[in-house]
Structures are given as structure tokens and as C-alpha cells.
Length: 370
Ligand code: KG4
Ligand code: ZN
Image (cartoon, rainbow, N blue to C red; front, top):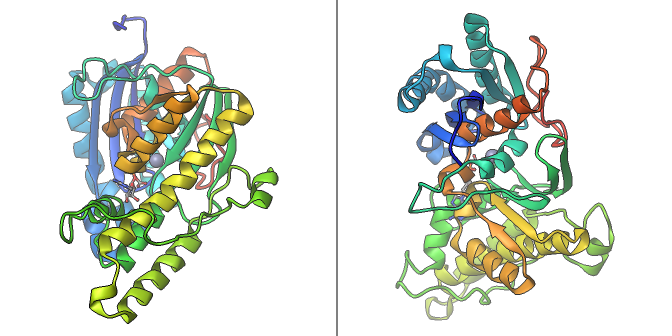
């Protein structure tokens, strides 16, 4: 789609976790998507440290904003509306973005919308990325089921409307999928972020190069018993904390064996990856079956996982379900997704947020504008 000047020019700010993102869109056209990550500062802790993330947002915000405006070739004066993630996410981190956005709104007189991060992940899929030859795609069609998987959240959503029709079907009751990768990686002696390192280990990258056997270790599948699936509260819910304990036991059991009889790190990593992916894929397909919706959108940083992409693609193809995976730069946390959501919110004529709006770390997904 070509942009017309009647489409609103929106600036989106995202600081809910460890990425400082500023994105600029005109309608569904992506003009800039600048992201600064504090991931390197969390490596030695094995996971995101909220205080460290907040401090990094303070430092990264101004340069990220400047760069996004430069890339888009616009000034703050040109912007029609400002948008910022108001939740869910880490309170301190969210507060940095919301405070910065309020400052910009006060200085420029532009309307400001506090928006929902999860709805933003969905809206990312509305951006036109057809010029991105490496990863074409986009073109969100509704209704769709969305599987959002990252270090901070894991949800299955039913989406009939981007602004007024997002329903949470299920989420994790303990660790997020990415968090499970990060914590288990640590147990396996692998660095943060755990996802890419577990994938590398599963492919044999840390031992002999021979891919691991995903059936070698029998890891539990959380909330997948017949009883869980009959329970509406648990049918689409996830639990990954048991897997962590199981991984710890598997590592200890291997250490107790003579070297020659041990399963390889590749086998443990591949089996763990399979256990996470298996549940994610099965519950997503269950949601499609129950709702009669034959579209799936995948979002969040764990969308980088090759095994998840392959298995979900295969299973969706088997069932005649179309699968949409935006380019990875729009799957991981970024400001453009918030701007994309803002474009829809503005076009719908929604009122800007009240000047005294705050952050809500557990903001419900059906509250798209705070
Ligand atoms: O969306 P994201 O960039 O931001 C946060 O949640 O903060 O997601 C990061 C998460 C981390 O937990 C990371 O381990 C996970 O996504 N991740 C992966 C892979 N790449 C990143 N998990 C599994 N496999 C991967 N290849
Ligand atoms: Zn996210």
C-alpha cells in the first residue's frame, strides 16, 4: 500500500523490558524502527535486571529518538500523535518511556496515547514490509489467533478487531517461554539470552556438530493432561517452571553417569526445545480448532526459534491454517509496533489518554488504550 498524506504520522515509544524503541509510521508504512538494547548489561545476571534496564532506558532514550527522526526524515513538529507503551511490562522501565513521552507531549502540544504492549505486538503485523526482500510478509487479516512468546510474556489471543476485539484465551501461569529458555540455558552452563544458545546447543553447535535428538530426554509437557485440557482456565494456559526443574534433574543424572554413557548437551537442549515448542504449537492449534479461526500470527522474540517456526508452519499447513510471521525486527520489542497500533487507534477517533495516566505492569490485554 502507498502512503497518502491523509494517513497519520505516528511516533511510538517502547520501554517495557530491555529494548528502548522509537518507531515512526505513516499509516501502515514503516518509516523508522530504531532500537537500543541493554541485553549485554544483563548477561552476567542471566536475565533482565529491572533496575539496570530502567537506567539504560534513561541513557538510550534521547539518542534513539534523534536517530528515529533522522531515519524517517521528519521532525517532532510533523508528528500527528505520540504513543507509548503503558503496560504490561516492568514498572520502572515503563515509567521511563511514559515520562519521556509526557515530556514530549507537553513540549510539542501533540496528543499522547498510552497503549497496550501486547496489542502492539499484534499491530506490528499490519505494517507493510513488502519492500523487505529478505523477509517479505505482513498483511494481517482478521480474525486471527495470535501466539505471543517472549522473555516477558506468553499468550494466546483471539483477535477480531485490533482496537476493540482482543481477547486473552490463555497465558503462562509461571515463567514466560523465553524465560524458560533463559533459565534452562543457565542450568546448562550457557549464556544469556538462553534462546539462541539453546538452539545452537540443540543443533550440536557446542559439541560435535551433530544435531541433538529431541526424543532423547522425556521432558514434561506443562498443563497438557486431559484434565487440564477440559478445564477452561487451563486449556490454553502454559506452565514452564516444571521444565526447569526437570532440566536440572536431567543434567544431574547425566553427570552421575560414566562419561561414555552420557547423553550429549545437544540431546538435552533439543529435547528441552521440543518440549517448549510442542506445547506452544499444540495449544495454538487447539485455539484455532475451538474458535474456527484459520489464521495464526506469531510474535515476540521466541519467534526467532527455528524449531518453533518449522513445527508451527508444518502443523498449520497440515490443518489449512495460514501462518503470519512478521520480520524478526518487528517480532522483538520495538517502537514501530506501538506506532502501528497508534495509527489504528487515531484513525478510529479514540481520545488521547488522560494527562495523568500511569503505567500498569499487568495491564489487561483488552485495554488497548489506557
Ligand atoms: O521479545 P524479546 O526480544 O524481548 C523480551 O522479552 O525482552 O524476547 C527475548 C526472549 C529471550 O528470552 C530470548 O531467550 C528469547 O526471546 N529468544 C529465543 C530465541 N531467540 C531469542 N528463544 C528461543 N529460541 C530462539 N532462537
Ligand atoms: Zn514484547
